[in-house]
Length: 443
Image (cartoon, rainbow, N blue to C red; front, side, top):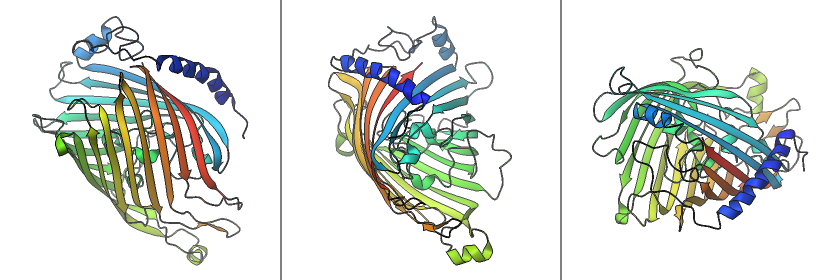
């Protein structure tokens, strides 16, 4: 097992206390207030309000009533590869996120606009590079940049109403927060599942950056906003949360992406169906080149354009109160791409998840499986040794204990049979077993 760094040692001083508190709180029903009045969303007693810091002497509620909101979260993870993978060991890391929005009409500027600014930064380390898998087992630590401790601005955008049903969105867009939505499996790994495979369809990753410049139209019927949402966006195929994106903006690196999500009512139970597509005109490195081509040309062959199609669904199979968002359901994703240059040729996932458990309405839990069919590139090093990638699959199970509405502790277990079966030095990479804890807090 690898030696613990200072951040990991600090985690072992903090997390055991959190576990002890969780054991105590999870043995009793979670008291949840009926909820503050609509004009007092941040008020309430310390253990039942939505955030740690509350209403700031009612200033926060007053600002929200005037169209300005501030929402901050911190997510910490302590996770370890306990068997298999490329190497064993534990790692501690975290990510902070601040999202603020302003309603232009309510602050007296112009009607129908909402300005959004999102800031985030991470610290510490993750075991994502220890499993040999393409899919990160700690997605929270993969933002704003994978395998880097940094600060970024993933979203700085304006959403402007064009009519009661249509709106324009323009600016730097957080595509994880707005795309491939699923009631049981979505987001950045700060709640629900931790593995990237259950938060976003991996066939999208190559052509739709996480944070990128874009413009598009969103349709959401005003009479019933939850019934349907559809979008059509033109975004830069190159973008990061740590850059503005203007220097990389090019007509030869654009992605057109669209999707539609509709609410269903099968068997009288709430569900959703989503379908989408992406197409990029960017020139990518081709995955089909052979060693001879590489040596003769001295460069990786290029291929222009890449496409992908996605589908996902979520469906309650047990819903005690219609439209409450609580109950037990199933979900799944399918994805297909060109397979070259996109290495994620096909993808499938299927899972069972729940929201609310008896007297604990804020708890969540789930178990799911994924399979990723990979087009194997041939990596060539100085010794002309080839290391290929193979198909990948994994299983994840989690239970999130809501200590309070603003603090949630998650126990997580994953098994991953990675794409990388052999390292460059010839070491065999066995399937990895990964255990971890995650603590999410809203401020």
